[in-house]
Length: 297
Length: 97
Image 1: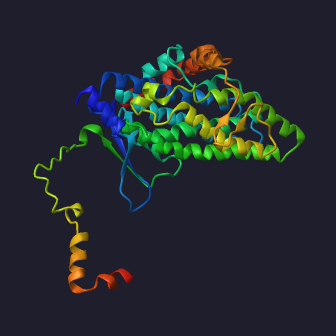
Image 2: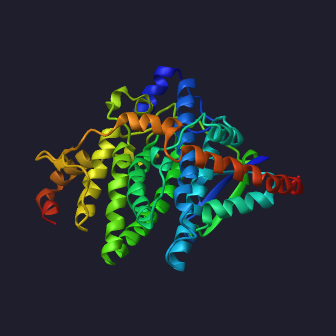
Image 3: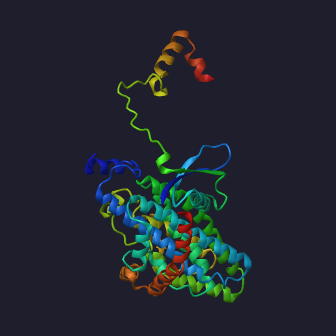
């Protein structure tokens, strides 16, 4: 099989296994894309971890702890896939803490209040599951297979987030205010989340069928699914231009793509602090790995 | 460190399906990692954890002669059945049924 035949094979919906031949470009794109996903799962727990001790009830503390554990579990599954493609996990972690690789924009921002925790678990996870569901048809089969488990867990994370938000919306004015502030704060990063609207044909990740959905298609799906759910609670979406046209397409204020670029290249408000936390905790737990591996050897 | 393939059974009675793999220094760790990563939330009834090199792969099933007599697509009965019904005079009756 040559590169052209391979491309035609994946474009026709064909799937590839770890030990199949693949073009170098395909392998490199897979590693970069999947590694960023793994990084995002691992970094994505930090904004929520900060609230485990401050969660309002024991039930919420347990639920949040379980969610954090799930997301770390996802990063383990995903790094394993990257490892099989040729990049060891240790190197992924080195590149992450030294800022050589990226993670999703939404995990570079602070979690100011308990309202943010609810909105992250509800809407950030909702945006993420739209991308992840499209990966169930990924041309790289080992990645598509673990996505089944990940989507299954994400679906109850969304319910957990929605439950936090609904509880607050049924509470006091002050609680409702916290949720509204969080929606207002998170809306711009949420609109940037699926990336700028490059035509799917020009996106190499779509061309190789690593992703099967264009950026704009994912954003439209998010707006269609969640704007009505936000509004029905009496919450306002902070975009005066947001409206659904008669042909079903959502119009919105152009997201700030410069901000997105700057944030994901390591200049977000919490980037440095969170990478430093990751670096320190990795150092502090090094002895555990050493002892356990020595014991197993 | 070795790679162990993980197969999971969603509930008793159904087939095991390949789920993913773990890297572990020995079988004890492989079991623990598989348990954590593929059964932590009660999503599996059982797991098979197998060293990757123990999996024997057989592929390349070439059907050189295009033998279709042992598959359902080798039997297209529609036209023959219509003809047989026509001959027996039951064509209308069988449509009404």
